[in-house]
Amino acid sequence: MQQEGSEPVPYWRLSAFYFCFFGLLGALFPYWSLYLKSLGFSAADIGLLLALPMATKVVAPNLWGWLADHTGQRLLIIRVGALLSCVCFSGIFLSQQFWVVAMVMIGYSFFWNAVLPQQEVVTTSFLRETPENYSRVRLWGSIGFIIFVLGSGAWFDAYSIDSLPLIGFLLLAGIFITSLAVPTPHQQKHQRASQPFLSVLRQPAVAAFFVAGILMQFSHGIYYSFFSIYMETQGYSRGVIGVLWSVGVVAEVVLFMVMHRLLPLFGVRLIMSVCLLLATLRWLTIGYFPELLWLLILAQTLHAFTFGAYHSAGIDCIRRLFEPGNQGKAQALYSAFCLGLGGAIGSWLGGLVWDYRSLLAFEMGAAACFIAVFVIWFRLRDERL
Image 1 (cartoon, rainbow, N blue to C red):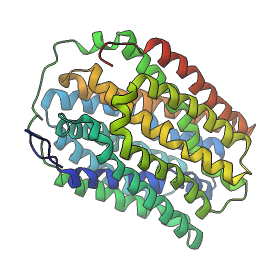
Image 2 (tube, helix red, strand yellow):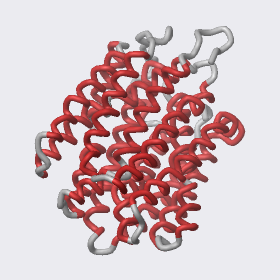
Image 3 (cartoon, helix red, strand yellow):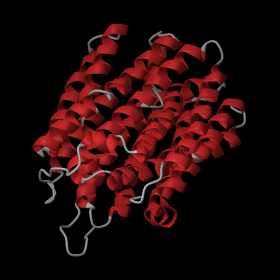
Image 4 (cartoon, rainbow, N blue to C red):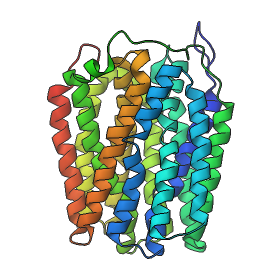
């Protein structure tokens, strides 16, 4: 991929990183809860354990983002974070006791959460002339997710789910190896922002963006932690569960291929509002009609909007609302409070109500997204958007 009048974009090297990063999510997200269940943990234990990696995002990305913005050494931080996350995750092979598993998840996620926000800044630096092409790089992450969610589901139907930690370790190693191949963009120099970061955060549109992001990821925290368990209680095999996960990501890939046209056409505010409405519909459909496979498939295709389109619009929001010197901190804050805090609270509260009434968890997720529609529509107003 070549931008006119600028440095070439290392398309395949960036894409390989996203392939491994989201391939790891494809292997872990759908099946880690089932792995923990196979170890004998309760729903409350599982909800807490799955909340821990999200909770570390509240601290870790901000620390790494501050360090990256002040040193300009984003690629070094990405590589060190990837290596240390791999080292910490290897502790899962020593013991599967609750507190050992908890420490492993805290340790590996603390460093792993340093990786993606800074990689997003590196990628957008290469794409500074054509930022709408972000989705064309990011779609390889979705392809990696699909391959590993389908492959893992078929594998775990035939063999023990005890092999999941080994798959996770190998993909973490792949993230580190591919990070070594990513070059430094020419623009990847330290830049000071003209506005203090805290003063930007106080702007109404910026605050609305983060509040809506927390609410959206609150609902996804419930989904990521308990969708597979919910489907298994309905009698679906792990292979079918893998297919259901992959349906949404296939739809996401299709959307990423056209997202570079949709963003300039409709704008981030309209796209994010529609995505939140579709998320509300998605969680209610999954919660109320789990026995209808065809309806579940339709609900899963909405992942293209509830994650793919919303995330792409969110990345563009950060690019527009924050100067380059603040973008590392902004990406870190987005990861911390939206992907981290929101998802952690969703996973934790979902675990608390699950044994009482599993449907209530999905109802809470739908309510959060519906509230976020009004936050975006009435408060996300800025001339830069």
